[in-house]
Length: 550
Image (cartoon, rainbow, N blue to C red):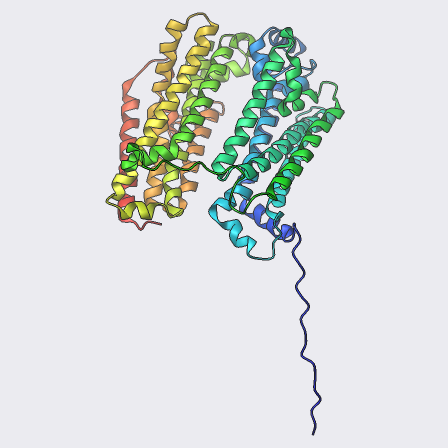
């Protein structure tokens, strides 16, 4: 039997990967990775918008109350700098004036963190190098990051319009509100994409983009408050200003949305163009070479911890100073801004601060918020210890003559000192703002610095809880640290308004802090909080000493 010769089967050559090959699969992966962070961001943005619809409707329920507020707004350049110009006299116009600028700012920050995480952040960790070894186009990761940001902003747009409509405001104005903040978010998604091509590190890319958003916020503030000096044109140079100029609930100018759309398209085009001119893992601006010899500060683990945290400390301190100045300036006219002593906001402030003087109650409540913000910094700084461990940086360090307790304690001491520094900076800002606005700087500055100092034990206790989680529950340390922070803040902020029992309120360390300025300074709660800080820190260091690293 003769066999029949057959030709071997030939395989078709693989199709070449296009620049966006694999983008669909990567998008699904990115959304899965962001399944926790994205809902948090979206909830934050909805809370900002929703508070405008529901809270203002309750506080300024009559036309007379709104007229009084509108009169105060029109004669206060500080309020114009902080919140923008008021376009109209309706409840919706007041909500847009009070909340839109900060909703747009938050949308921009959300987009920055999303885009940098999925571009430069993944390159820095080596994830994109692994993905790039498969059939994935060169520009797919950048396209995916921008797609995720666009989807997030689209969801914010739709849900914001629905929330504002549910609060009784016109649907068209609510849609314009959501469109304004989403447009700002898309602009800064493009800015972050460009920054990710320029910088060689995720931290550098975020710094560039956040600096850009700070600059445009300042331009918008100067433009809104400098109309009498013919500076209103500066608002048109700011994407945050574009959100305001869309005028939700104030005779919407729909054509203004063309500005963020055009800026987004141009920015995305520039980002893709720059991406084609650089190597994988490298930025267009090469990092500066380090010095030939290490600084004396790097001779021990404490110096290394400071080197790792100094950029964050500078950024947080600047934010605390600017925010404190804003709080202090507004405090000088808080009575006119929120209405009579019997108003809902006034009653809530007095209940939170446990005192009757409205200005002191406002300042005490704000100083408590400053303490909570400092606690957020403390948690983030403490968790950097776990990040160094999971990134593999701790093992080479501990291979040197450095003990685990020495390494951990040095980092925690630097974190504690940095937390105190940002708190003092916040108190300095509030004292300067209120002291200058009320022409009583010499008396108000020491009072408000003291009010910031009493927040130290509560802020450090939240950071110490995160340190205990790093030592005892390393895999769950991030979740545990931020959960403790969230519970403490929610109870302290919302507990008095919901009239929770004292036993529940006592769970939060911030409810034990003396309500300064104006309240009674007692040492006992500060001593107990400080003792709890020491105990939680010791537990964390003991756990770090006994468990496996990594």
